Amino acid sequence: MHYVYIVECHDGTYYTGYTTDVERRVDEHNDGTGAKYTRGRTPVELVHTESFDSKSGAMSREYEIKQLTRREKEQLVASSAVADR
Image 1 (tube, one colour):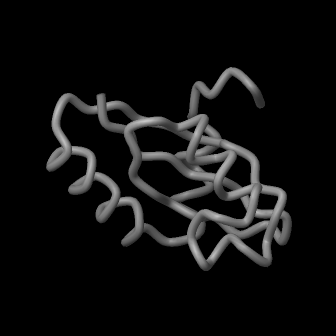
Image 2 (cartoon, rainbow, N blue to C red):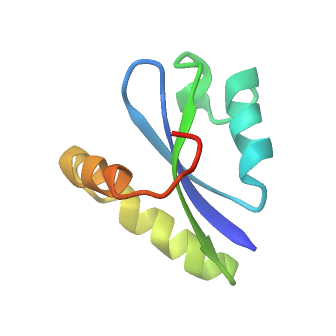
């Protein structure tokens, strides 16, 4: 499976990414070995995930989410079914 995820950074900003292992990727962000954007904004919290059968589908959705406004991302996160929230 392929996943698109959104984490909320400690400073309140969102980071959207693609992975095949969401838990590992969130751990990498929190360890400081993830994306450069999140390195100074830890800890991060997983707030949204979507799963896809193909890498191309997930990456297309990642691009779509990155084009959303802050308000639209907030609405997406609010409607999310992430159990840990």
